[in-house]
Image (cartoon, rainbow, N blue to C red; front, side, top):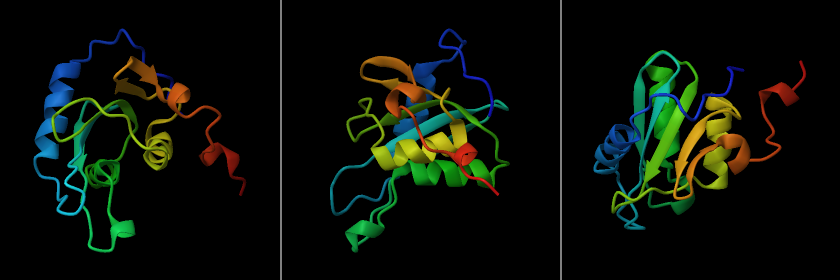
Length: 137
């Protein structure tokens, strides 16, 4: 696990949100009409993003966070440090529970999330999370 990112780190949340909005513009949401975009900083300085992709078999739709972690792995892996999510109006949105678990896998408890209530560590959004450290070999 990487140490928690610090809230006072020099992060341009406006720029990160702009990347999420751009990603949201590529969402495929013909069934719900609810496009979502996400963006995150990686511990090596990269920015990754993703958008939701729906499917006629509703349960098979992919949240934007799925696209983001796929992009993370495709471009070299690493740990997520800062994350934002926007809806179709470009407003800040919090990830669903499933996606919080996905973010925990790739960012840990210290991942900082932009929320309508301000910047919060994932540990506050997913308290007492289950993760890789709970699995024994």
